[in-house]
Each structure stands twice: as structure tokens, then as C-alpha cells.
Image (tube, rainbow over all chains, first blue to last red; front, side, top):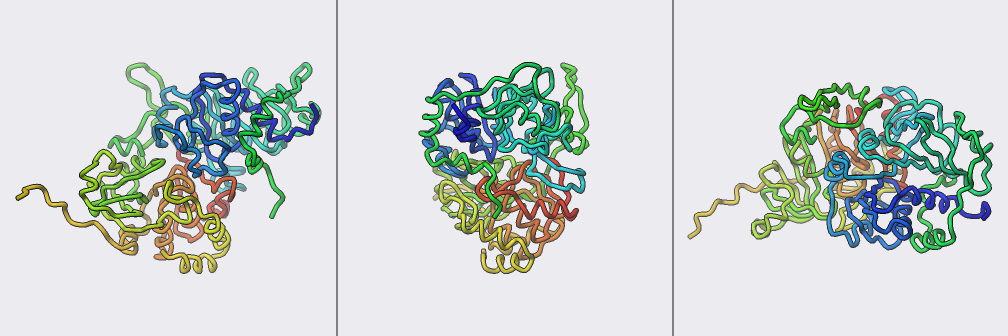
Length: 244
Length: 157
Length: 109
């Protein structure tokens, strides 16, 4: 396969493949790509996963990917609703296996910044905030991060503010998949048409493993099912658009 | 707010280790007297007021919330006083007939306002979804103080 | 003849009167999460009444935090995450006030 596969598709498949069948998985707010990945995993290799959505639905059947967290589709088919405190209590007592999080900065020690860039009390940039990630990243054993851009401003040697750290095991970007290895973030797979050198150049710290880097290839089935799950390509909403 | 709802000074919480959230928050740690495990002690947050927009309420403030409850129930318990705005006011008999559907007991509530559309331009699911035009109108108006004042006059209540 | 309890006095009041219960510098939390079920109309009335120095606590605010920030009603905010999500973007006015130093933020864990 060539670089013609849309990056959003590659990322959705890569995120889906991190999920193991039978896991209890959750996504946070502003998480279209992660939601799509969970839908894809459930439709392919992880049919027994338990999905807790940000709206608090349990194993909903949204049909196709909704475009906002208020969409009634998130609660379609759900037979229980967990309020936010119930969601956190479940995670805190060890009842969740995997969560997908975003981050503004990620450093080589797998620490995440979702809070501020610059000084904490008078920041250059005030970010959306951690939303409980500081706790969740330590009580949920498998945390997967994704970003829809891959630049040295995102992948920094040291984050400006440690919002969360702990069980981050993988990061998915438009260039490939990075994984935790002995407490460091290391490139694990590259997307078709992307060279390891390009990834190294766009990362603010050394990230290449000693040996060759495998190429991540989605299957035709995965791509086809992705198309069924999100025919409107709403997953593109998370990708940077031209400035207005 | 969960600590406040329990009337206790703090909640021992796992997590937060090695984060600037803990540092910036100035959180102390405590040692579990039984196991010796050290955890952060998150101080209680007790707001003076909680304001909740609910779907249905009676005149004494018993309220029903449909769809996702969010954190509303903890807020109603953590705050010193509670104000409700409601899409609909229903007679007390409705609540007496199905008290198990009541999410906020009226005994927690100080005041209630009948306010259909009170969440707009946001959603009040399942009754109405986000009004995208209304959000856009706010976002544009908020860029200047003068436009925001005009917005507040125009979008009333 | 019923000897049951009376219902008790009605707590119904007007929006303006309900807002007047909240004084300057009060700590307040609002229900709802992000763009769902925040008491938007109440928040607009607080801004119209030019409330000052409020301390907002809310895990996941959006319109409420942003509008009160823009209207200069807040002294501080303790939040978990704030966003209008992918469709509308970030809470710009909140961000602006924090970056200017006119709004202090406490982290909500």
C-alpha cells in the first residue's frame, strides 16, 4: 500500500489495534478518532470489549460516528448511564483497562502536558486542561495518546507542565506509532511512505530505535469497516483545517 | 466536591504522583494507617452555590434530570445552597408518584426558576441539541466588550 | 380528611431574583458538562447584573466559563478541562483572560 491511504484512516486503525478483546475501554471529550477506533476494534478483533463513553453510556450503538459529544447517538442502545463521578469511581477502583487521551505536549519520558505552555501562573498559552488525566493516567493500566500533528513543538524533550504521567504506553500520530520502552518514548512503527528520518526530524528528542522500523499496514477489511462506521469522514474534524 | 458531599475535610486519592497538578495544587500526602500506602489528600471543595439546569421540577425544588447527569448530583450535595432552573415545572403529585426518579431532592434546594430553553444555545439532551448558530453568535460577540453587552441584551433570558 | 404534610412554601422565583441571591466574590458551580445542560440563561443574567469576583468551580465548563471570563465576572476558576469541542474550538475568552493575567486558575484534579 502507498501513502494514498488517508492519515485519519491509518491512525484510527493504529489506535484500534492497541485494544485487546475483553478490555473495558473509555475515551474522553473531544475524542472522535479514539471513538472511531473503539467502534472499529469492536467490529473487528475485539467484539467483547466494554465501552464506556464520555457521555456515560455503556456499550452504545451509535451507528455511524457522531460529530459532537451531545449527539443522542452516544446513548443509543445503552441500558445504563454512568454519571461522571461514577465513571471516575470505576476507573479509580481499577475497573477500566484502557483510556485514550490527547495532549498538547508529550516528552521523551512519556509525560503529558494539557495545562499550560510557559509559566504556570502567567502562561504564554493556556490549554484546555487535564480533565482528570492526572489521576486516570495512574489508575488505568493502559493509556494511549494520539495527536493529529507531529512536530518538535509537540514532542519536546521536557514538557512545560506535567499534567499527567504514569501508564502511557503508546502515542499515535500522523507519522506512525511510538511506544514506551524502558520509560522512554521510542518509534515502533511508521506509516506507509514515511521515513524514519522524517520522524526523527519532526521529533524534539532522539526517538529512533537501534534497528529498522516496521511499516504499519492496515488491512483492506479494517479500511472497509472504517468506511462503514464513518461514511461522512467526521474523523477529519479533528485534523487541522486552513485558518479562517 | 465528593469530600464536601461527605462532610469530610479531604479525600485520599491515588494517582497524581510526579505531576505538576499535585505540586501546583499544594496537595499534602497522607499515609493509610492500615496499609501504610501513601496517597494525596485532596482538600474538599464546598461551593457557596450550585446552579443546575434540570428538565423537570416541582415548586419545592424536587428535580428530575434525564440523559447524562454529569456531576450535578455531587454538586447539589457539595454546595452550601442550590438554585435550579427548569425546563418544566410539574405538580408535586408527579414527584410523589415516582420519587425514585427524583435526582435532586427539594430539601437541598433554595430557589427554582421556570426557564424553558434555559440551557440554550447549549444542549439540554434529550430535549434539544446544541444550537450551532447560537454558539457561533456568542463566540463572535465575545470578542469585544461592547458586542458582548449587546449580545446579553439581545439574548435575554 | 387528609392529615398529610403540606407541600411547604413554593420556592419559585424569577431569574433576576434568583441571580441576586449570589453575591460578588461567591464561589459557584454550574451543572452540566461542556455544551450539555449548563445553566446558560442564568449565566447570562449574572453577567447582565455585572457580578464581580466570582470563584467558579466546575470540572468541565464551556459557555459558562467563557462568557463569565469575557464579562469580567470571575476572580478565579478551578477547572478540569474546558473546550467547545472540535466543531467550535477552544474556550477563547477564558484563555485570553488567563494569558493576560486577569484570571487565576486552580487545577481541579
